[in-house]
Every structure is written in C-alpha cells, then in structure tokens.
Amino acid sequence: MLNLSSILDYSASVVPEKDALVLADKRVTYRELNGATSQIANALLAAGIGCGDKVALSCPNLPYFPMIYYGILRAGAAVVPLNVLFKRKEIAYHLRDSNAKAYFCFQGTAELPMGEEGYAGFEEVDGCENFWLITADPAAAASIDGAATLGQMMHGMPPVCEAAATNPDDTAVILYTSGTTGQPKGAELSHSNMLMNGLVTRDLFHLKPDDVHLVTLPLFHSFGQTTQMNAGILGGNRLVLVPRFDPDAVFAGFENEGVTLFCGVPTMYWALLNHPGAANYDLEKIAATLRIGASGGAALPLEVLRQFEARFDIPILEGYGLSETSPVASFNHLERERKPGSIGQPVWGVQMRIVDENGEAVPAGTAGEVVVRGHNVMKGYYNRPEDTSSAIQNGWFHTGDAGKMDDDGYFYIVDRIKDMVLRGGYNVYPREIEESLITHPDISLAAVIGVPDDKLGEEVKAFVVLNPGATTTADGIVSWAKQEMADYKYPRSVEIRESLPMTSTGKILKRELRSD
Image 1: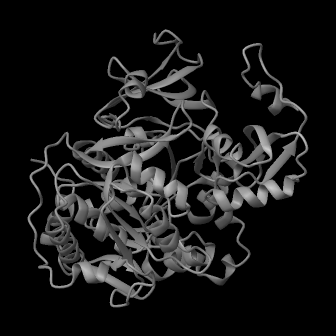
Image 2 (image 1 turned 120 degrees about the horizontal axis):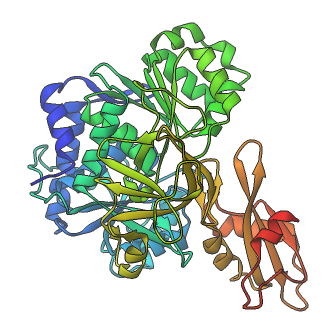
C-alpha cells in the first residue's frame, strides 16, 4: 500500500511536540495535527466516505487546510482542492465534474463570503451529499442555515485512525486545469505522483529538519501544495502560514520565525523588493536565516532576481511545472550552475524533450513543444479519455508550451502554444472567460487575450461584439464579469467592437487582436 498521508504519520512519530504549523500566534504541533487529521478521517468514514470517493476543499492557508487534506487522504478518498475565489457557478461545476461526494468550505469574510458561495454551489449539485462549513472558531455555530460545521463533525471522534490501504496508483488529488474545450478539467494525481514529487522537492531544496517555510503560495494550488506543504511535512519542518500575500505579513514572518525557505511567483518577489515598509524590519536578521528562494509560475525578471539575491544573500532557484506534472518537472539545482532565465534541468526521475509537430526531438537551440515523461506525470484527466490520449502520447505529456534547450541541457520557455493568460501567477483560460461573457444578454461574441502588465506579467482583456440595439458599456461589462467570475479571472479591460477578425472558417484571429 501507499498513502500520501503517511508522511504526516511519520513526522508525527519522530517529532510529535515540534511545531508543524504557525499562523500568527496560533501554533499546532505534529501530534496535534496528526490527531485532528485522524478525527476528520474517522468522521468521513462514519459518513460512508472512503476509498474511491472524491471530497472537495475550499480553504485559504489556515491550519484547517492540511488537517482536512490529510484527513481525506487517510480515509482513502481523493482531495479536490478548489480556488478560494470561485463563485457559486464555478463551485457547482467543479463539484459536479469531479463527482465530489462531500465538500468542506471555509466560512470566509464579509469581503469574501466563501461559505455562502460554497453552500449555494453545493445545493445545485445533487450528487454531493455532505457539506461542512469550516468556521474560524471551531466551537462556533454555523452561520448558514442547514450547514453542519467542521467542529461538529469532529466532535467525539477518536484522534487515532490508521491510513486506508490505498495503492500507489490510486488517485490522491484532482487538480483542475483547462484544456481545448475551455472548461476546467481535473488532472488525476496518484499517491505515488504526489509522494515522489514531495521527495524530489525535499532533496532539490536540501531540506533539513530545522528548516522553516513561509507559505503564502495558496495551498489549493499545486506549487505551494507540493513544494512546501507536502515537502515540508515530509521533512518534519515548520510551516509559517500566510493566508493572503501581504509584504508586511511576509516580512514579519521572516523576522519572527527565522524563515529559511521562501517560494513565490515573480510578482511576490517584485512586491517585497519594492515594499516601502521593508525598512521597518530587521533585514540583516532576515538575511542571516533565509537560505533559499524558489520562483515559478512565470519568468522571473533578471533585475528582480539579481536585486533580491543581493539584498538577502541567497540563491533564487527558478523552475517549471504544471498541475499535470504534480507539479515539479525541472529546476535550477543548488549544486549545479544556475542560469537566470532558464527553468533549469529535469529533476530526478523525470525526462524532458523539445519536439516538433510530429513528436520528434529537435536539436539544441531549436524551438518546439516541451514534453515530459516520468513519475510526476498524471494518470490522466478525470473522466476525459480523449483529452488524456491527446495530452499523453507514448508516455510523454505534451505541455502545450513552446521552449528550447541549450547545449548544457538547460531548458527555456519561449512562448505558450496554448492561449493561456498568466496573471500574477494564476492561470486564466480565455475560452472559459469567453463562454461566460457570451451569457451576458447584450454580448453576441467575445475574444479574450492577455496583454502585458508591468506588475502582474499579463492582464486579461476582452474584445466583445454587442447584440443589435444593446446599450451596455465596457465598464458595465467589467462590473458584470466581476460578479460572475473569480477575482483573478475577470477582464479588467473590455473593448467593444463592431466585429472581430476571423479566418474563412470562423476562427477568431487573436494574433491580430494582440497586434492592434
């Protein structure tokens, strides 16, 4: 058997009284985390949820996330992490598409009413039988009529539960991404996929028992989930949680907790470098403990990399991965030459190639598609055999990203074959946004592209054609979209046109929109 939750079992047996999680003044030891995880697993089993079932989870970077995540795994079910910014319709889609049998959702705040949106989405899905509201105070009553709380669920459950005897190839996590249809689809990652990627990351970062991670990357996303939560729990490390990226919270965590490892997307490094309040913190003390940074999600501007490394006297390692690869596929390695701008070399047990349109390897320096093979590649897309067979050919996962390799075996991403927009480290898929926009009563046609943005890398822009007689404005469409889509998705810029450039077969020519 192999169950990903065993990494917590092991660390709890070795360092039970060590802090596993820190959130402001709240501290959770490995023994406490393991006990809470077992209570959740026992409650799930009592509710008839176990091996083969899917359980969704919407929660920011709070101690509840790893408690529930490993509890679901311990019961033998698969975790379906959802973006905390999703709205009702998006939540309902993911619950339905994943065949989720249960759903844990944090209550949220007045500004981000996650619980209300989550419960509304849950009520639209007949097959999802259980909803548990995660309250900030575990003893608090539910703020939503008809909802049970996590505290009520765990009450009276024993803090010991043996992990279900799952197989290495059983699904552990379903991470949603997008594809040719524009609708998000779930990448099925096995216990083996996730464990191996955690082990690889632990070794890649040379993690030691006394390492301290600052975790502000969202744990529902593959980057933070694998490289910090799973790798950190595996190493018996301390995880300092920051629910929402804020430079002051990050600097305070660095200074107060002796953080040694920070993972972030380029915009985070940029914000820390340019934070006007940075001088309020003991930067020398921070530099004395911080030993490594890691960046992914987009190319880190060379000047940002150099300035950050100089200020804190640390190496920043750039890497590459996708939800479908668990996610780590390549990285610059500590013990090898680092090449700024490169995504490095494949990690242990993983192969990468650059291929042409026929799947044949191309010479060094020649652009082509990046393909990946190894222990990190997903089982496939959940309930989508055609998409799976298109993406995984002869054992190689076709990333849809264009890249090249130099003579030393270092890889570089040069463009994206897919139309994906990368906004501040979040993947935004134009087709999904377009399909939502055309549900607006005044819009007949829509095209979405990414446009350059100094802070976020790319911003989402929509071009729309209105129905005859429609009088809505661009600002009105932006306001409508804000209500319909997660905050990172909706277009901040809308241009109304009489027509959109098309091919003779009716395909919108986005390259012309980009060149305008």
